[in-house]
Length: 399
Image (cartoon, rainbow, N blue to C red):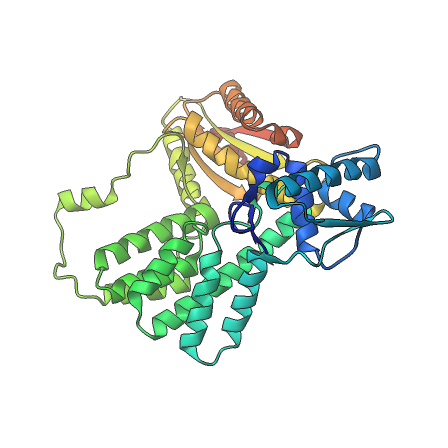
């Protein structure tokens, strides 16, 4: 039997030998191998496979190129796992040899979650959920998410993971298993760092464990994340958990100025100040007020990320999301500590640049875009639109 791991690092083992991306030595072989394994019960035509593993890439002779890849994959599998006839060929079509048994973690993961959801017995449901979640070690085929069908499956399995975590969290909460709940949420938040529900469960777990200070820290962290990622300050869910926090006896009701200062001080940060849109708007209003008594130039910079025209709507959203994340990292590295930025939409950043001329603001935009292109060639197909306005002029127009 071959055991296949797809949730996290891709690898295949028969118990003695192991194949992974490094041993296959080709991203195309990895694409071909996992596609045939996932659809091992079907007979696949040349057109089926070619459209899946090449997608946007062009090949003048897909049938010939696929024959070559099939030959190389067979040779690799034979070298690693013995002289089995792993892939069968019949009149230009291919299929996995049904006599070679395969167990794939993502299929077992889905099966266990479905069993857990059907269980009336909560203890048995917990066992199924815990077994399923132990299989989820990362995104499905993370190195291949530039492929549309891989991205679709990755999104599906991640949504299954999140729903399982939250259902298990609710059971833990009902049974007052606070330590298990805290550990579950802490692990899940490593891959889903902006999920308000997970933070709420984590806060309640820490309240239940008597970790009031940690619970308050989680609450403050959640507020900051909601402001930064979603542009909201508070929600009914977060308000409700705050009331729970405030009902916990603290033993102290007033604080001195040093304690207040320590509480509000920002941890040392580099690069631009990131914040949610409401906070950005208030900072902007403050800067406009200051500009009436200052001659220092200040400009508002709007950067819009645009996907290639040839990309489908879903691929365009994925490409833009990747680029936005990379741009945020770049701004943390190369902008000044006094610069302020936020996400204005799913594809736009706005930056407030104090003591900065319009010409210098354009240089800032070019530096960000150039850094993105240098970071990874895949971003070379991304387009940008840049708009710059002087803060005082914007205010005058608004008046």
